[in-house]
Amino acid sequence: MAPLLPRRSTKQPADHVVTLIGKPDCHLCEDAEAVIDALATELGFAVEKLSINDDKELFRRYWEQIPVTLVDGKQHDFWKVDPKRLRTALGA
Image 1 (cartoon, rainbow, N blue to C red):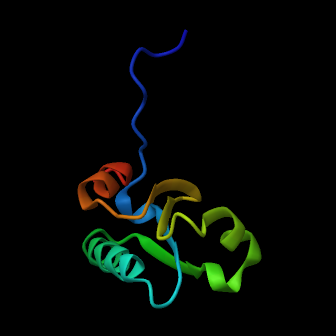
Image 2 (cartoon, rainbow, N blue to C red; image 1 turned 180 degrees about the vertical axis):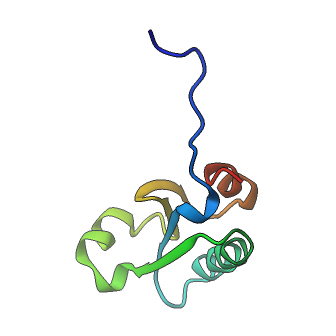
């Protein structure tokens, strides 16, 4: 029988990896990076930064959406990083 309520992850914020996909000279990417870096300092999660200029597949998939945020490899957000929403996704 399936539970009525979804189970919360037992992962701590520091157990996650947040990936920021963007490109140089992108003001939205810089804004997103500042939010992610501040939360990473506070919560201890790992940050990976990728550029669509360095990967043809990333460019094909995300060029209209940058900056794109992934949490543990799954797309979380694009264009803007909402700190409250990201905290929730990380279980903080």
